[in-house]
Figure 1 (cartoon, one colour):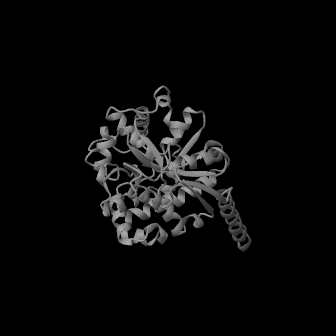
Figure 2: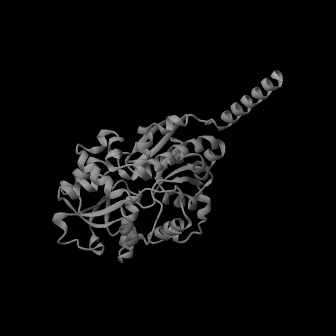
Figure 3: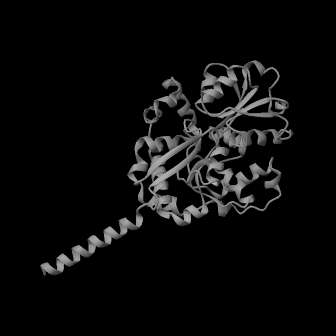
Length: 339
């Protein structure tokens, strides 16, 4: 009897060990690209690092911070990074270019991007249509901050190239460029916009930080920040992808229950830009941005395609299969294991 019991226990141990081994990340050291890690657009990433959720999943994640999302995308395509936290629209644009880029978890259900005008230019720029000929600061040309302005301009009867777009990043440099008068308007994310609002340097023209603002600009939810990969990386490293998704999903659950003050206490202090109270205010203004379930819905997919078709001729002329840009297996599994 004792021998039988010993055999059964040994078999169970082997089963558990085999299961654990099967779920271990194939690639523990992961290079992740992002365009503006300190911005609230990418808050879930910052919190995942600080809360230790990557480490819990057996991962060593090296974050490579670029000036904008288009640059982090280029790094992925050139194999300089393994994965990107970036805008969902990039997956659609890359399909048209024959590059299979796939999102595995949604972090933001709204872009959280705000278009603001320099206060001393508001006498001339009162509406989107008045942006013709303006110098507009964006995180980087081709990034989602650039795309949202082009979308708004097209809807207002302008052409995408009726304004000049200047890359200013998503940090203090963007605020400085606005204050120095180098820009007429800026399309950026918090806490940079919050700083410009608080100091009276800028006036908001349109925003997608709230449900109300996103509905007005976009007509509903439109997936923003996601975690995306090259399809071949997913095929070769499914356990690594699952570990990354698990870590970020746990953070989304944490954000849903946390106070703005708790959130501020769990990001690097340099992200406060010297003013914690202002950072907390910015967090409050963006709480509606973050995904509740990590799912890129069919509605968001369709809205994203329609968004790009407004100003991107290549997208407008293409037939896009959004289902090929979204793999829900990993977030669905995370939902059953992460509480």
